Length: 175
Image (cartoon, rainbow, N blue to C red; front, side, top):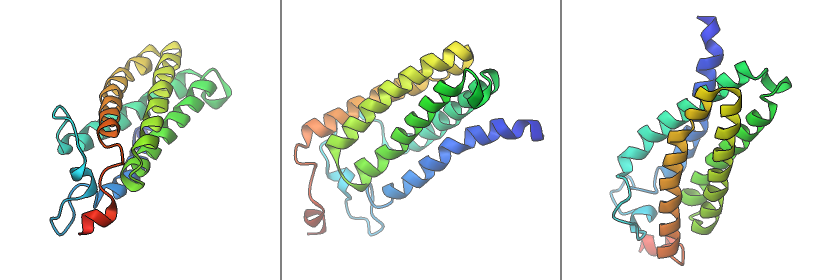
């Protein structure tokens, strides 16, 4: 069992940041008193996924990317071998990923969330390529992540474009 612990830990670690990020969502979609929250007041495209899809998708993607990082760590000699740069890039993309939720939902900053997700998309794509060079399976595991980020980036762009002032102000929501 202990031989599985590094793989299990690697799969769980990215989810921790996702869990912390979800704390920013608490009152941003539906408030406890049933009133409309900031996100629900934004102009959003009709093709966006339903809100309930995001949790299971991100949990799956976080677990998959974490396990992929374990494969690269194991096959690439850890931080002292060929895996050093890909794992550093993995850490950078994870930081960008974790930063997006507080920027978008916490700060309500559509412009900076768009900048973050574009940088994230580029970093994830590069990370997938570098992972592939060490462990092809790990590289392939990034394909669903890149696909979902493509959708998320388009969604963020459209929301930014269609809400030039960042959506209703907090004061307006309380009125």
